Image (tube, rainbow, N blue to C red; front, top):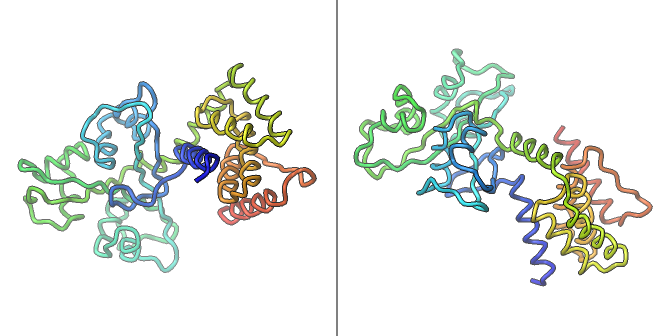
Length: 308
């Protein structure tokens, strides 16, 4: 891998920390609403739990999901913040088919309805169901369903949920791995909320004079076709996260141009996607923009329309 491609890969990984969610975390299926979070100075599990779940004791979600063995966090550490998500019932759905599709067990259909406060035998079309976070917990010698429920739900009354979801006959066996379902509406769509929070921070942030000077130099180098000078500067400034929103967006756009210059269309698409996210009304001048960039932008616009 060339130095430029290594730098591109590093920058893309840094950018992914603001939006992306891996398909698997410690063997668990994750939700696309989960959020990959980079720990900042002064963060703690308690403050993160309060910010994203509404109560400090819910840090147990983060601890269990990430397999943490210590409550201490360090700046730069990466955590997955798990999230519940919603499913809207469609014609032809049944509780059993929904449970089979998303929980892996049709027999959990009644439990799914109960946890969503639906008293009918089936969820009506259009009903919005909260789908759970699924945490893993290894039973210790002194555990009971009641103590486990107090740990994850704050109340022993929820022990029946653990028993039903895992189909166990109490007491559980030490060493047994249980799935703990979390139907918490305060944990809905963590990723979307975190992205909005990040955008607010960016809007408040101002580019320092020193970084403004670096940007001016990078723009000048780019205009002269000195991509090996310009692109690493844009990359470094993006990774350091010390740019105002407009400067960050413009740097991402130029990085997309750089990626095309180095014939890395996949990287160009990633940069443009991030630029779209930060730009309310993205516009590329057809007279001055590479046809390859325009083609990628059109495809991204079609994707956005299809999602809507």
